[in-house]
Image (cartoon, rainbow, N blue to C red; front, top):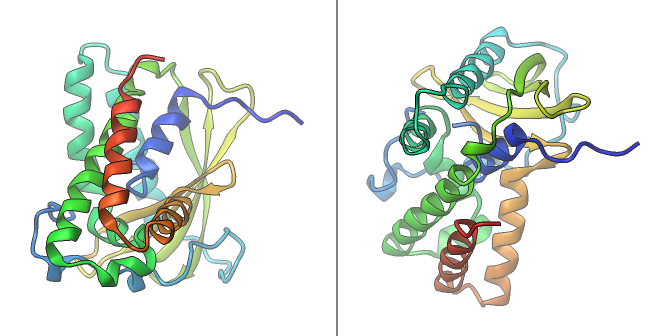
Length: 238
């Protein structure tokens, strides 16, 4: 069976996946390093839906994904907003929904522990700007796709994988999207990874970044320069 070509909505989701999800009241990237969660908090790589999971569903986690997805879709479908206004709104949504500090540490893998505070702050800014550029370059291609939540599995209390489908618009058949969401000490849900058509995006990002750093003997400046170069490439017309 032929897989769907990426639709506008799944491309935007993939861009958000650079930061773990579709848009925490997480603190800004410039906050004190002690507040930035280390990679160990995420434990191992995000599992597939059926692994190490209980049979329970979590209505609150499902409602979180559904509500935030619909918020994003509302912005995408608002013809009164300019592309620049949509970009500004999306940046705010990311800080409200995705656990940016946690994800930023996670994608560095084993190298997070070896960075100085200054190096981590520089990487954080570069990574955030790169991710912003990736999804912002796709905002104008939305063609009416919608996302519906279809269920969830509780891995552990406060750690849930929510299943959903992208339908309509340019999709000929539903595209499955999974969201890993964690419940913080403040009671709020935050997204930490997204799986689009079988690929966990933050996990894949970590693998790519660690490989780059392995080849560079751990030199974070090499990865930062690479992300800056890919950011420039992303804004070129295709």
